[in-house]
Length: 252
Ligand code: 13P
Image 1 (cartoon, rainbow, N blue to C red):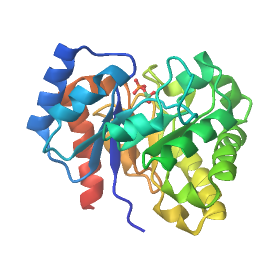
Image 2: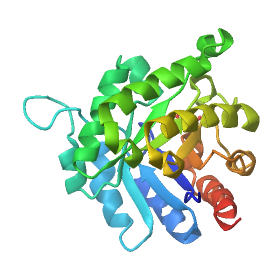
Image 3: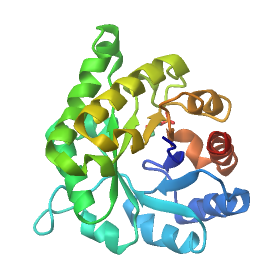
């Protein structure tokens, strides 16, 4: 089964209009890539990002979305609004939201459902903390997180992108070894297989300190279909190099 590699930049709460313009111009210069490439930017910058990417094959999206359709939810952004702005993707369930905003597995699943209802592909993040890994719970935790999404989306589960981001590898410079990452990806793939005949077509990205010098080795693993990139997505040259590493996988 050939899955088109996907590399997504998660800018997190970084950027400014001036800095974004430089970054996006840098990507324009460096592309195109054989892999699919996207940037998930802060809400206020989505419209301007869309304009800057006009005519390019780089997609864009958000870093969250509301589980609600519309109404009195001050501060929330609906997936209908994201669709209105042309977003292809919405990250949901990032560990920073699970940790700092107390998002439950079910809320994350509801957000994924809301995104899909408007044609926005949810990039569903799962991942264990260091304490959970050290307690031998890594598989149990990611399986539990994915199970809520499988249960809620039922036959639509084949429409998601999944991202495995071990919490202890995010922003720490400590990457999972390619073999450790692949082992969890294989577990997630089996779970998807059990849920849908389309399990083989679902892309599973790895995230957590992916850099130009480790990307190729990670992307060479059988079940790692690209990356969700934090810090290194803020520098055009680094992000471009990671996209190129996924290119090689696309070409192989
Ligand atoms: P870093 O690449 O900065 O470790 O962040 C990973 C991440 O959280 C992407 O969503």
